[in-house]
Length: 70
Image (cartoon, rainbow, N blue to C red; front, side, top):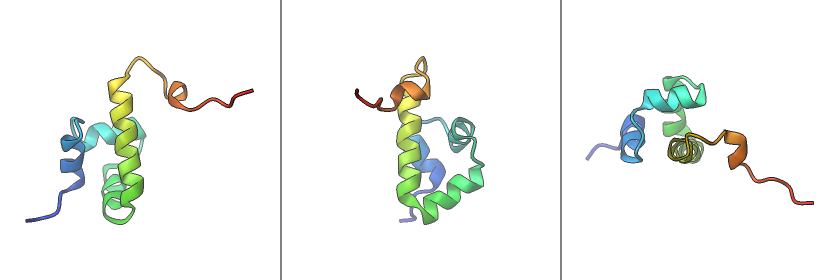
């Protein structure tokens, strides 16, 4: 069995394509492929963030970040 490609991981996690992730993150598809191969933890965090953003399209990314408490 061949390892999953970056595109397959995107689709398996409910995203339309690697191109969608590229557009959401402003990173080239090749950069995302390199992260998938060489920085898998970073790639997985990016996919998780894209999933979250896709699930909450009406929210700006800053809303998803923890706010410091007073």
